[in-house]
Image (cartoon, rainbow, N blue to C red; front, side):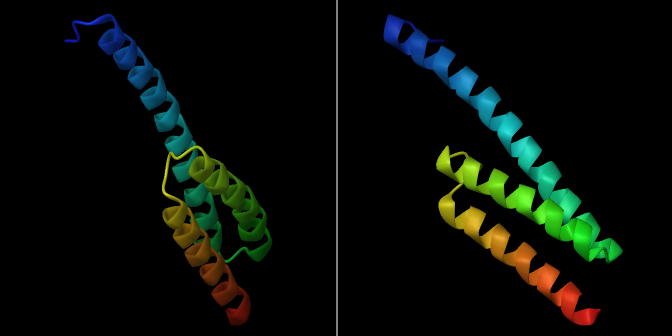
Length: 90
């Protein structure tokens, strides 16, 4: 347990940030899941529209340092490649 005033404040801030980051990550995972499900079902239009939303959420999470910039770029790249592969198959 923190003893000093500043350590107590850091603990409060850490708890708030952790809660905020968890909600951002949870929403992000849900959006990525929607894109992957649309790709698996073979629905190009839905996968593209969900991908746009996922891209925005990934960029926002990376800007807030919830996830690393390169991780966001990697996920976007892999989703985009999967959508292109789906289009080519049709």
